Length: 279
Image 1: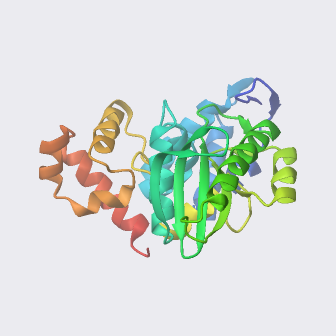
Image 2: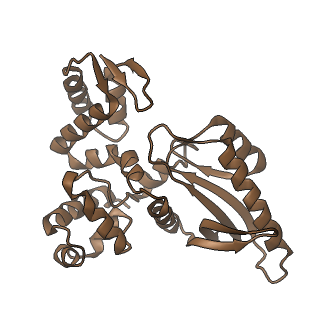
Image 3: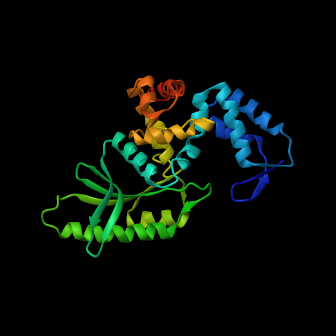
């Protein structure tokens, strides 16, 4: 059985790949093996990776919805769009949970021109200009051009701030946060100039998914609810970007505000308690 990837490439289906991806989100080994064998049992000549993913999600929803949510994390973030605005708000919420003060969509004058900054984050003595690079296409990468562009903007703003005698004496930094991976050239350049990078899988102990899992900062749309996905936009209109935010509301009251079914809100609240109870 050949798997057709999102970029059109084909590779042999490997049971162990399915098992490993499931075990990484906490699925018990026997369950992971059972699901992998079920997928293998489809026994098709070719199968799109999207079909495999949807089948796995279907099985996980039957076994344990919490596993399904964790497995769906990367795709859920890709579905925050279609624009980058929801991702910027989500990143801002993540950083606040880590102790930063944040502002989004700020216009800051540099020495040469004015720049729109996705997120400005502050911690004692530190001031970060953050570019949130959002991709909704599997396989997309933030490349060297992104890193070069971001560094040039940062230098323009940094030069102006440091020349302003009334500006607080802070250590200025620049930070690229993206929901996909960065190319090796982009990472190499960032390391060379001192640019912070948080992407999918990098750095290993402080990657985007690590920051999310370690503090239960799951996006509001973590669970694939099929035809009811429209309600996530209604939640965003209420300023709700984290799944755990739902725990602050009564399901019936939030249903009246958003039009989302109370039973679906109650389901999400139940899963949020299980996912975030340690955070």
